[in-house]
Length: 262
Ligand SMILES: Nc1ncnc2c1ncn2[C@@H]1O[C@H](COP(=O)(O)OP(=O)(O)OP(=O)(O)O)[C@@H](O)[C@H]1O
Image (cartoon, rainbow, N blue to C red; front, side, top):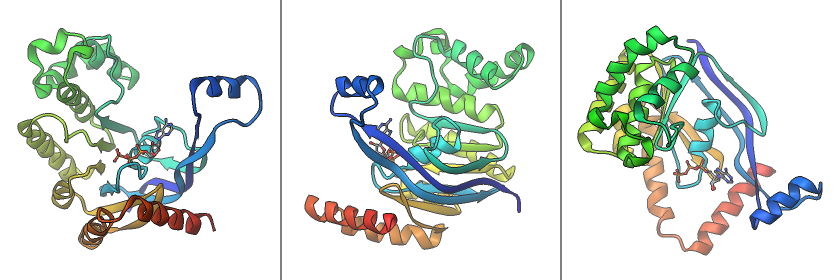
């Protein structure tokens, strides 16, 4: 089996400032202002060609950060990331220019991906058809609902035939019919042996679609394994976690962070 994604000891640090003035001062005066915050800490993860992997974890656990790093949209602060082949990320808020029309966004994205004019003209009708945006395709994206944006992003990403497809919560907005159609398209990708990463809070979709699960917790890897093994453990954890008080949750978080930094 060919390894297509390798993430080794990856951390992502953000500096949290109390206000914009502090951020600006930090740029001008080399005095350390702001607080370090690790969205990811020492993450190891790998994927092989044809793997279909779900990322799960509570809010803020680092799923989108890791997806963005694998897609090459956000740089890691430390560690090594190797990705073989071209990736396409579908996220609700990803890569669309609000001032341009839907059609211009399609053309811009395809140009950036290296398609020539002729190829763009060939692909465009399929993308527009799949998006079901019809007469809205020549309206500026800022007038679109989040579901419409997601449809446009999804249609571009699946029609450019990427080697690795990363879908971050993009199926949770928009209507059921489009989500079904998108799932069908993803099943086609699965049959073609493409590698896919799927970020979702819907455990039903995860069970239906994924083979492996990466469970992230406060920016660290809690578990990585087969879907049948990890999802029940996660469900059990969630039931316990949601009944904890804020204090217990903080204590739990601190304990995990202590272990990671040992
Ligand atoms: N640009 C940024 N600056 C500062 N902190 C950030 C930035 N981007 C993300 N974070 C923080 O990093 C942490 C991980 O965020 P991320 O979006 O990866 O989590 P997630 O698991 O995808 O969450 P959710 O399920 O809510 O979408 C969060 O605490 C978030 O606030």
